Image 1: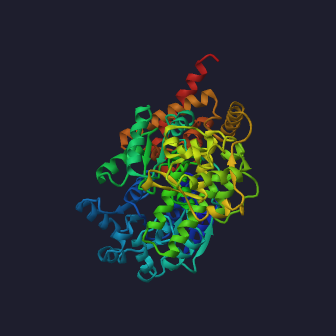
Image 2 (image 1 turned 45 degrees about the horizontal axis):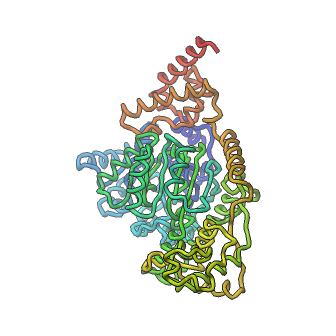
Image 3 (image 1 turned 120 degrees about the horizontal axis):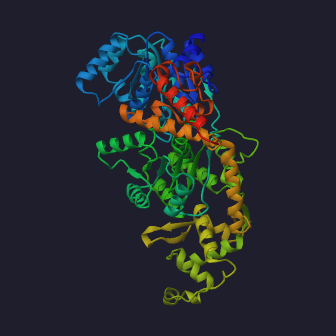
Length: 618
């Protein structure tokens, strides 16, 4: 461990371990197998990279995506580590050179996809090489209960037989109890030392719109909170990604679309741009994300409902990997819920699998509709209890209330039934309000018993109630009838008066007062938690100068800016203003390699800034 601590500072530029990192490193150094569950941004990579450098031999890392392994190899090389990957993108001469370096012991860490690893030629090659450890990243891919099942991961059960005595570590950021058991069983890690970190990402602010705000809500969120910052917007379909990206671009937000339907070279180029350019928004399906190691994503938004809380946690976890404040935002419609339910029912999955998928959807709906602290609900889903509300999610900053709307709900369901279960929300609201529209008169719905019985609510309140009835499963949307609402079996006890119906509603304060209160709360939240917002004017000028230097370096070297230095390191330099190499070496993220490569220029920038500030009248 003494050697590990030396390399922690010399290579990675850190003086202390993050939670559980030291214990995991120590277990691997002692030759134990490990199963580690750590949140995205929690420092999983260092858990195997550091012991791979300390132990004799080459560390083998199994990663599911080419883009992810290429990004990690680039970052390791920047730290002075001899890292490489073997995948289908390598030309034959480069492939032979990498294999030769591996045989000669000149590679510290090698990245492989599971498909490449399981090829007989690769297994024969690795049999010639002393391995320090084997790391299986994104280990949830081995489980069919996980959110990103990859069948090729199942073949990794051969590792303990083919490489006996080599310690293995399986890592994931998202796995419920069932998925964890699947990982241990399929990877033969039943006896592994298990480490489960807190799922909490305290730097992430969680928010869900109470109504479907769509693109306009997204545009307002980006403009007011994250103008000029990098972000990811998740959509349900390829068409939605294309249309949303084009719409944002027309509104002045630099945005690109990403989905599996694009040609591979186009996907690769768009991902390269997202990693290399600052302030770009990627509008994507779930095809985008796992290979993204970009630490300065400041927001993740959802324009439709995610597949599950596990997916939501994984996707939102791509924000704020550098530890600086980040935000999530979600807007969804009742149609999203109906589509999810229909997808589950029409899927070829087994009855047991469908039951689990329905349970996952219900857990997600409980999260989006909860009046409680969102962080408490999210953590509880993963078996972690938080005693106190976080004080920083939307529900904590602007608490909603729950109202008994049993009678209006029964009226709404009766109206669906009395009008023949053939009409959408707009028409049903007209009937309840007693509006004599042409459509109401033509259908004869001015003569049904529910005509005009709902004047106690406004149109927006009725629409919100119908949406909630769909979300809770009392009604469904029939796309074959152009979005008509139909009753489900779940509606019967409510119509009979055997159940009550409660709905989350906004607090009773006026919209203006509510907006002011929310603005003050968010402003206090920002000042308290954002180190960038806490910079003085002079420190901000130095930070901007350092950021401009980093951008130039990234372009010269054709690397993502964050590979040069993270924003957090630039902020620390702006505050400390080091003028000696010894002082600069204390900045987190600056190890020996980066100090040798960039130290002189960084110190010159700091000194130049100090001279200018001294010569400028206050």
